[in-house]
Each structure stands twice: as C-alpha cells, then as structure tokens.
Image 1 (tube, helix red, strand yellow):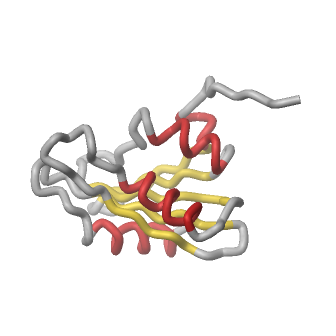
Image 2: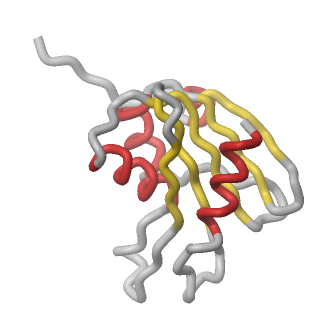
Image 3: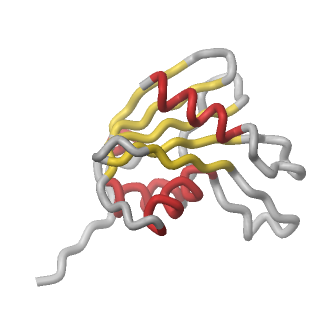
Length: 127
C-alpha cells in the first residue's frame, strides 16, 4: 500500500484549498493495477467543493474503469482523516468493500475495509 499512499501524497500537492488550507490527496487503484489520483478542489461557496476521493473516483469512472481494489487518502491532520459523509456512499456504490488506507504527513497510517467506515450502506437491486 505504500505506493498508493505515495501517489495520494503527490496528488495532495495539487489541492486547491485556498479557503480551508486543508489539502487532501487520494489515489484509487483499479483491479488491473492502474492508479487514479485526486485532490480536493474548493470553491468560495463551499457547497461546490469536491473531495479528493470523489475526484479520483470520478476520474476513474470517466476513463471507463469499473473495478477497484483500494484507495489511499493523505491529509495534513494530526491523526489520519476518514472520508467524509458524501464520499462514503459513492465509494460503496462504485467500489464495494475496498481497502481504505488513511495516512497523514507525519507517516501515521491506518487501514480499514470500507464496510468498517460505512457499516450500514443503502443498497438496492433491480429484479
């Protein structure tokens, strides 16, 4: 997972966080091993801000990817930060119960399955 964390750390450098100053980077690995990076992009309304995890996921989906195995998220926080509420259902819907590695700039790292971070997801099936 260290390569995925390194990619997320690189993505974080591109964050557009001029309002919060809280830069986040994410790296999402496909089943074929390709990595898509994302960073948070803020807007003065805050409502139009997009998280790093969603940028990585949407980039991968736009490229035609549909199978994912892991995501890493890097922040500058004292403790590694978890994905926000809006990111978790999107990740669940498109990625399933993937490995989630959370890291900070100090080198702390924790790993979870997405089901641990999002224990009761809404699911549905069409018959």
